[in-house]
Image (cartoon, rainbow, N blue to C red; front, side, top):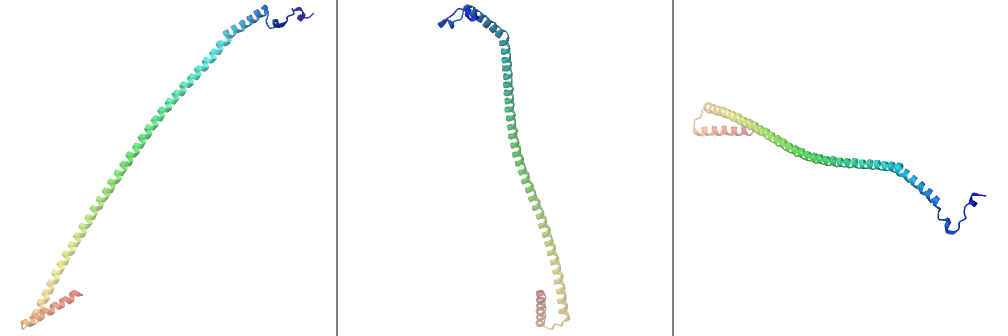
Length: 179
């Protein structure tokens, strides 16, 4: 006889409904599994999940701090960039002012140099005028002496001959000036 034949034969819906000992043992196994699950597996699972949550929270805090640091660094960079732009603008303005003052100074020096050159030229012209005047006086003196000598040398008998001699002398003078 087989084990199956020892059992009572069931029919219909009874095959789907378990017997009391099966329910008892099934419930006992489920309770043991549930106890082991809650006692050993669930605490480890919770511990792992908590560790993972803490790790994720730490990474979020680190990322948030890094983001804040990056924002601060960006703000500092923008401040420095603005400051550098203003410094560059100030340097450009100062350079322009320096260039203007150098140009003005060069113009003043050029004017002073031109004025000195003009004064030197004026002094040279005045000296040349004086020399020409002295030379002219000397020439006039020589001419007067020469004229007086000629008048004395010629025996002038009348006023008419005297005027003739003076005219002749003046003609000779004009001819010598024209050369």
